[in-house]
Image (cartoon, rainbow, N blue to C red):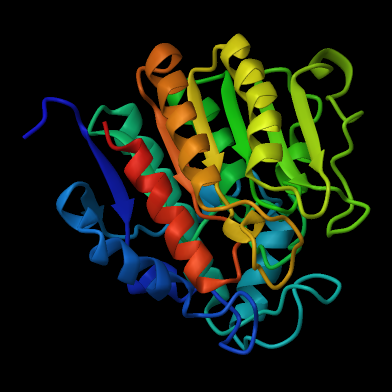
Length: 316
């Protein structure tokens, strides 16, 4: 056994159930696609596979309003209707299922902080569009935002770097922490003129005391690996200079060529590069502490390849 704590990967039916039916881009087969490739590569022998954990309501309240949480609980009883203006359907037991997503992310944070894991990956997580008071863009509870709040409230970790390479801008995280100078935010996403949610211009760098703590890099449609690497160099320098205490990577695979909802043309090598780069920064500045969450990705093969690349790149 290595003297280094292992990488923990969270797997189980509890988080696999997060989805909106198999006729929806965010279908119930996404976890299975990842898991098949994960086992095909033999990664189960190189990491610790951990069972999902359910969050307490008090955990969810670290980020979300009580009224919104109550709305999700109520609508989950029937599983009908939309939790927002029409993008995010409810489904039976949506509250309980999403609480498992949040709880798994928070358990990963705990294991990393306690030194039981060096890094961790939660595949069905990274629900970065949800706002403090509403769902948005297939995202019910913002596990990324909750993790950031938990690091502050429970672990006294103030300076957190959140990096997002999903094709969609991580608006739910960005606007929640737009005025927070200790949340270092770097997001490479398809230009909002072409893709939901239409935010994340390069001029959005934070407000007030937080101005300059946020980096948004809109990518042109059809941007390839070369364009990614050029942009990533800026993000890497930005994060390194910030010297964070903890790193969160939202590694949505919808930025890989062939996604049905987006127009970027990376290969899955981009995800390997990002994760490897951040692991080096984590080793240099954060005692190795890094959490990756799956995010979007609606081409199942892309998702499987990109996420497994991230796991491999995080293994010490």
